[in-house]
Image 1 (cartoon, rainbow, N blue to C red):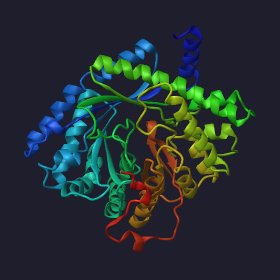
Image 2: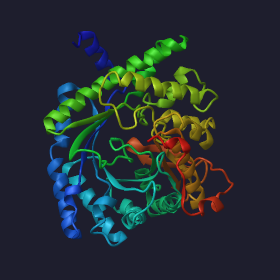
Image 3: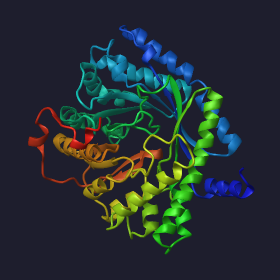
Image 4: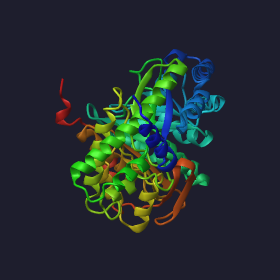
Length: 454
């Protein structure tokens, strides 16, 4: 039973500590839409999305009003479009037409973002995969709400270096096509290793082929709640620190479980998972970096930061899995630079570098996320950074991702502004030494020896 103390405590979390449900994401299978005729395919996709998701936004608003829990985003993920468009698309322009259809459908139902303009290429690229990938710069420049992701590696298959090489130039081209918006197109494009089928967070969300026809996945947040809880146990030993994080994660996840259950019931769509990640925003007091400093490092990036982040990530998971039987997605702590004011402050102080961020990604939920680099960064260097993150994910059997913004016309120390949840980011310096000879090799890096577990 929920008692009055828990009600008051939850209200305080919402009103004073930035607790929210970051997203309700409705996953929709588009497999039934497949047609060899492009016009019919686009019509099928539009009709399918606008039918299944017609009540998503209104239901989200009703739950917000009824329970007093802010739901920041209502989103949609769809089956990877490279699979859906393969029979009908003969050119990059054909795939761009599908991106426009997704954008129109998202606007029609009122969602913030739609994900799934994606290709799964961990072991190799089909013709459709390559066409979709090459269409990404144009697709993201002519749409408002479409997010794109490319899976380039996995622990089971290794790293598709042909895809990694291509993505370096695709990211750069996307930056150039959206240069008038501080290269914002790249904020909607991510390269992944070991991508989960049920991730509700963008830009990496897609509706996996192992999923049902439609499913509700919920992503909760609450860095401010965790920081406030830890401020009450300053100076205590690690056992108290860990217990405090676990108990707080449990409470935060219970809120997500409640919202997920209500949304599932009201939309008559199966409940999938709660992703209990700590996802920051640019708002003051809603920062993962601030939690690390509350744990005891002077500034994020200082010695001890990676250990503190590992502790935080593990305790969040341990607390969250007790609150819901269906925890999935990424689940842990995100460390995007532009979306976390504490991370931005650390970069501006010189406390954190790309190399330290890379080290932190070995123990957090994702990878190099929302990081601005100079606009003249070579394509091969971008590919090298992707390859490094893919290797970390592959060897450590975890999800890693890269969302880089080569800010066209900007140099180290400048800023890029995206607004809203994407915030702003200082342009970070990149290692000046190149890796072109490594990147231009063709083929794939084999899976590690520990991948053979059958």
